[in-house]
Image (cartoon, rainbow, N blue to C red; front, side, top):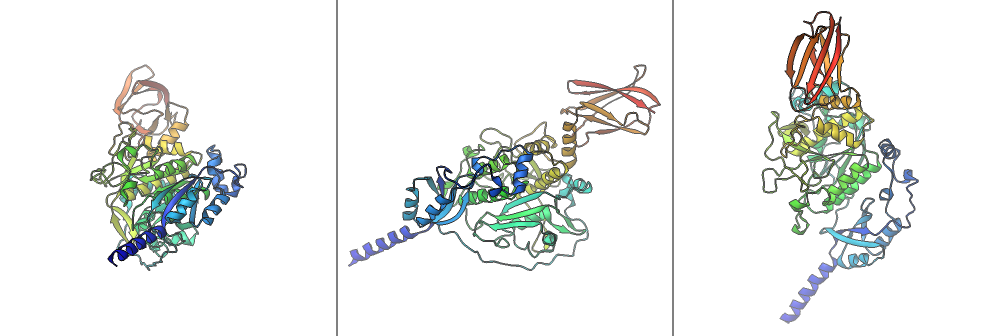
Length: 534
């Protein structure tokens, strides 16, 4: 009798295991027989997505084609529950038990499958609405410091607040966005253009967590006279890809599928304040050697998005104070703007993740204010810390640059932001290339677009000052000598010129009317220009 009970118990366990539903990603061998064609991209890409590719000379390739719907149908017929397909990975995210996944793997067009999370995928998650009311205790622009530190206030003054730019935010949840005063302008002008919850497979995004709310507020929050987001006039696509209740690799596939949807919708920029290296199932963990820009699924997905012409900005990670220390995927991707954290005084935050990558690339790429960042959440302005909140500041800067210089491609935007940052000539693996600034980026781009190595203007000059502009900068002070028509030195000085103060304004009120020569030495290069003072 005892033996019978043991056998029955074991049989019950085995039956439960066989019936257990887990999540898998199934990779297909090819896209043969697909009804889609690279010659007809409008059948699966928006006109905005196609236009972005055309502007940057990016060709539509087989990778862009949707997966073969016949393959998906056959996977479904095998008994699996199908959730999402991935163009880039050529496969499908499913739910299945052990027997069913075995049958799926036997299908002739299936390459292989991987377990990405145990347990069933939630569907139509419970909605939680909160009625938030704005705090009226503040009477100043409370987030001025974080805007000013990277020049977003100057960007706004020049009229660049993201108009015409489409941004996807991949995060954990957006509690209160649909009811918060700081976001009402987005809905009043129909600038929340798409939402989806890839964790719960539903349209409900205003639940689960407030992290995405805080990130969005840094970019889009608006309370007249109190709070100003970095790019309030942009259009937003809000996607939930992060499951706050657990940590499994399915979130990397959620990220990929959301990025593909953003690509199809024609976004210009993705902000992701997410990172991955360890999971609830230790067999899924990444090692430090995997930070090579080509191993982690989410890193490879970020790289795909960049190759489609999308600027991708991601938090560097908050591992600086623990044993991992390094950036987390996808921040290791080549060409991604991985953002570390500093405080208002430009001091590195102890939690900010470091570099380098395994292949010895500098990380993070740049930094912004991630310590004591002012956000809007639960109806009030508050402060939070983490590279999660430095990332949307740099994303706002990148969006403003895209608006100001629409002809730039994704590589040029990355290059301009990184190479004009305040320690671009001496980058390190703590703060990368340093703090970027809108004025510095603008000066860098305009200088690169100029054919003149040195320019002095206005020339002739009738006022009291001139602008001296260099195309190439070094880490050393620039020597400027002014000679009169007889070759006599009338002024000589050295000045450090950075992208923030290039062009350099110089006072010539003491010069008499006449002809002068201005000699500028920067590093090993010396240029001389005639100047007429009227």
